Length: 179
Image (cartoon, rainbow, N blue to C red):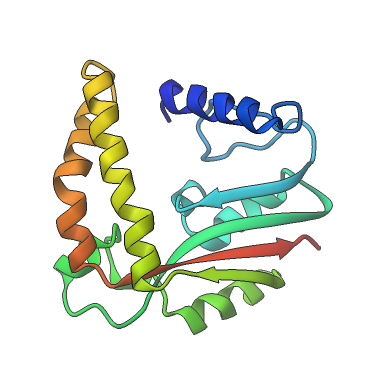
């Protein structure tokens, strides 16, 4: 969403020597379809772009070349959330927005995806993934206090740690072989 983050991604691609292999597009992901078919289409933690996982799969398929792979990072319930506060701490508005892992895997099959790999975070690895984001947000806020997204990121940094320890969701990354 931020041109600051996009510039950082481009710099990282240069650093890794892969800048000629990737293309970065600054656009609204909701409804975005690549001009040319791509080898890998991904959506990590933002399936709202397709109004949920099934719609995001269909959206990403429109950019994918035959035989390409889809990578989706999708949260799931590790256990039933006890209340609405916990649901909202997990960035959901209703319990039904997220599914238990077995149901999520079934849902991928229902939309015609072959699950070809999964990386499931345990609580320790999830903590190590999430917590450094708070430091990055803090550093970004220090460097970009007047950015149009600063207020939104300030709210995220204020709420994220408490929401993390309250939340009960995990994350699934799924590769999909296009039909």
